[in-house]
Image 1 (cartoon, one colour):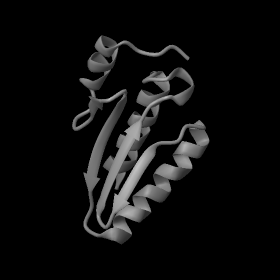
Image 2: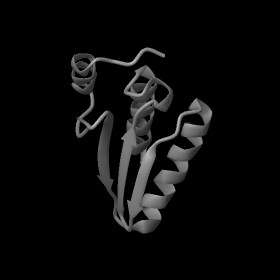
Image 3: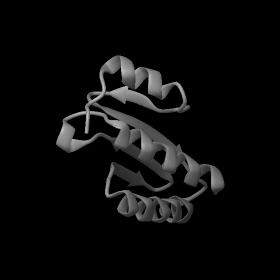
Image 4: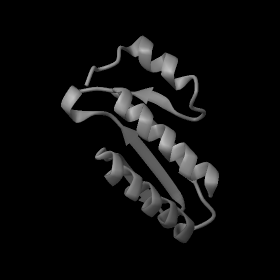
Length: 95
């Protein structure tokens, strides 16, 4: 998979509110009502990650979920990351 240039990454990020390019990955954070809601959404995201065979670096503290995406095989951000970011956004919006 082709690694995107910084310019390509910034262009793709225009369609994602709250996501930014930081140190070789795209990342965002979500805040939920409580831990149970955060964990529920994380579970739904986890199933989608398995389906896409692409897994985020993420961290959950109580009601906050931080997600960081890059493609390790390409050593950077690829189309695969934006596809998963789109799926994550759809899960968040459906909640």
